[in-house]
Image (cartoon, rainbow, N blue to C red; front, side, top):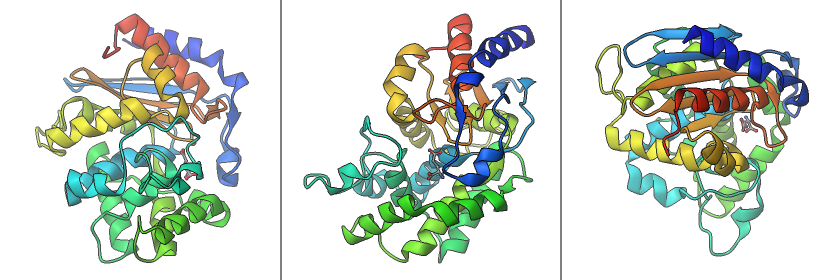
Length: 305
Ligand code: GLU
């Protein structure tokens, strides 16, 4: 496994120079363009990592998977899918355009920013502080890492510059998709995006999804199987922004990317994968990360299709 991972890394490294590190969140721009790493966790507990697999980065949109799972566990699928749909958009992740289309009463899916903000609003808690604490606790539980925390600098950078997300939230409040205090909700959303992890943490989370929600280490059912299935289906159809179709055709693994450069991937009944490479393509996906996953999917026959 180490050998094939090393080959995947070398293959992926060829692509990092053509990507760009995200700059619309100024703090993210400090990441190193050439970093690339991957970690694989198999269901029998073995782990393999190469490259920058131990480097911490903010999970950004990958948090949408964790929060959707928790919202489904808190509220049940009927209530969640009343507020947010499950259809792929083909639009960029931060698009506002479809929120105003008359026939749509809700954001199209929980993996775009509008849908994710609506999903965050459904997390149980008396206030934003309780909501983010519950999200963070769940992230720690799934990653089996009690040290997981929020990167304060990235959070502050997002709070200062996140007017597009703020406008999505205010728009949804005006149309009745969300209720309550928008500023408090947007703080929770930015905090969940600023949760920091390594590829190893992501791979452990991936292993839980790939094992139908059952922790391979403790044998505790951390996520109900039906919810796990739904979330993996949404990852497959919507997980890589408006490149999800292309990724499904080329790689065929349920996955979710983030603009911090991370990708969480879960190969059903086989393994969890965490990827980090902050050089992004024009759609916001880790360019080297996608190439490494394509390489591995091909060599290890990982596509679910
Ligand atoms: N915090 C980022 C935003 O909302 C997350 C975007 C992403 O990773 O796609 O703009």
